[in-house]
Image (cartoon, rainbow over all chains, first blue to last red; front, side, top):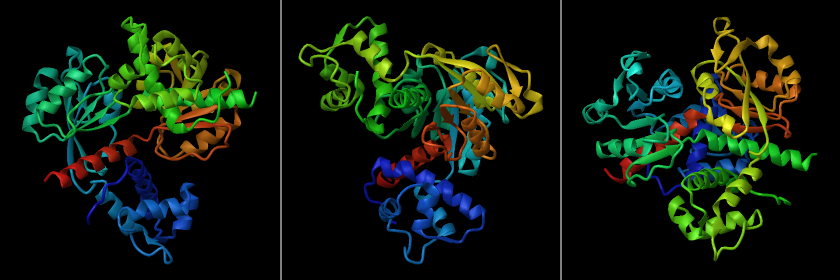
Amino acid sequence: MEVKEISQAVIGRLPRYFRYLGELKDEGVERISSQELSELMKVTASQIRQDFNNFGGFGQQGYGYNVEFLYNEIGKILGLDKKHNFIIVGAGNLGRALGNYMNFERRGFIFRGMFDRNLELIGKDVRGIKVMPMEELESFVRENDIDIAVLTIPKTGAVEVADKLAHNGIRAIWNFAHVDLNLPKEIQVENVHLSDSLMKLSYNINRYMQENP
Amino acid sequence: MEVKEISQAVIGRLPRYFRYLGELKDEGVERISSQELSELMKVTASQIRQDFNNFGGFGQQGYGYNVEFLYNEIGKILGLDKKHNFIIVGAGNLGRALGNYMNFERRGFIFRGMFDRNLELIGKDVRGIKVMPMEELESFVRENDIDIAVLTIPKTGAVEVADKLAHNGIRAIWNFAHVDLNLPKEIQVENVHLSDSLMKLSYNINRYMQENP
């Protein structure tokens, strides 16, 4: 399928469609109208149709969508039909939490290696993967066809590590370090700055309290 | 200061301004122009001015902004000058990672309690907080002035736990469970669906590979 230029806002909504369709599929639902999907997901039906039109529409609206077909198509658009090897840099609590998260494997993300500069963590086991020293990071990335690096290290050092990864062929960085990385365009970066998210929550609490004293 | 209706997109950008200004402040920078801030943050100067105009502008553009003043003002808007008590529901790796994250305290978020239904985890210590059984959750929230609950439990059960929290006076939920919560409007919810974020990354890798075969 030919994919047109699609806004990051639409792309940001695709995983949520995929999640809901996966649940419908697991429940044995075969068809769903955009109206039903709209009520379930609390977005307008026209938003859904507009989003889907970016990808050719996925079938007739009157009759509804075939759930499994739609689930598979969105999965393909998201690249989930392909396998991606990933490593985690930073074997602290967050890194270990992500390493232990089994669902990533179901989506095609294969956990291959874990690195830390803390000597006490080297050799520790996270779901069958031994933590390796940072000195081995670059050769490991080059030699093991690693696509994605998850950065769960403090912001000090994160920029430098990201540059090293970029020089050794990484395709994408899932960045949990509290710093924005400036990498060449060909490296995809998705930031998860947890503090930013908590501050947004704080804003909304504060705002609500001002409006409802 | 009177705060007008402000879009979530603008609010979503405030924490990033706050983060950059905090770094500038730590480096001893006293004033910065919107142009300099623009280059540092890789957003246009007009975007910055537009965002700031939502809050009255924060001082003259020609002369530049006073970094510390701007940092403090944005902090106030984000509600970071107030203390918020939070609990974590779910004492797995992710819950413990968040419990151990000291920076939240610096922003006024005070870690007060941790809960899990796994009996093996009850009584374990996370940064001075003992994991409590789920049976104590509701009374603890009521009696300890808890504003924010962090949900780091599997999606099964998350909706029910969120409802209980809502009935016992929680103001906000920072939701890491892979499910959308349907709560009354007065409860602020900020979702961090990590799988969604990883799928977005996967899309961007896939897309780049299609365009650059």
